[in-house]
Image (cartoon, rainbow, N blue to C red; front, side, top):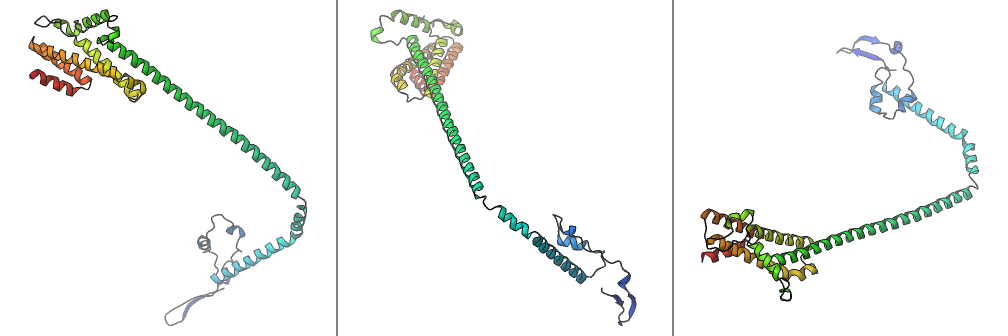
Length: 293
């Protein structure tokens, strides 16, 4: 134990302190080192009240280390025979280990077989679902194609487009369609006739023709314009388009031919909107230029 002494500048002692009266430090506890968050710095800082020199602390720690080493050695010596007997008891267990290994391998094979069946079933279900989607898509395409064919035929009937072989059979239908085209409806009730007595083309009827043609183009875009059936219908559709544009041109000529200025302008704008509906702005411009000429 160190002796604490304070002296003045000339080396003389003011007082001497005998540390024998200080409390003797308790031995270090083994539990202090067993904490999961043990930190040497924190441990040393907690020893400020031990009244013990650093060298004494080192000696105590060395003594504790030697004691733990001796305790560990004694524990090994005491249980040495048990360790040997444990090894002896395991002799002959190879057969049991091999049996367990065979069972595990068998179980592994069974699991793999079940997994393969599940995977095969999954692929089968996936293929069936893909086939169902393909069939549904083909069914939808078939419905669209039937609708397309019906609408082409309907427009041909309404626009008086018939083959020569069926002209006699369609004579009455042609007459009815012509009557429909020139019949006045709610939107054109004041324009049943032009000032010169010519029947006015029904803009309402022309609007329906243009809408039906636009719907044909939407079906073609949904199915795919390169579909063989649609490619086969292209000549009929082209004739329908040219007929509708011709009727629009005639309606534009009628609208600009005469009559009241306000109604004439209104009919002209209505016809131009039908051109726009069909996406034929260029044809509308060309028709207007021809009228000015």
